Image (cartoon, rainbow, N blue to C red; front, side, top):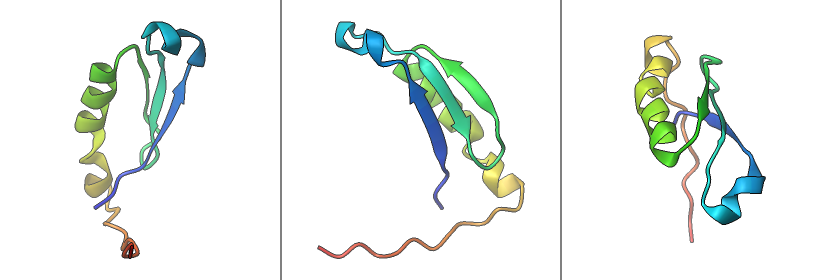
Length: 66
C-alpha cells in the first residue's frame, strides 16, 4: 500500500540546516507544520493508517523494470 503526502518546504533555511514547512496527508487532508525531519516522520507514522481506515485500499503500482 502506498500513502501520498504533499510536502511544502521553506527553502531559505535549508543551506543552514534548518528544516521548516507543512506536510499534508492527501487521503485525509490533514495538515501539520513541521520544523524537523523527526516531526515529518512522526506525522507520517501517525497518519499512514488513516487511508486504510477510510476505506481507501492500496493502489496497484506499476512494476518498474530496469
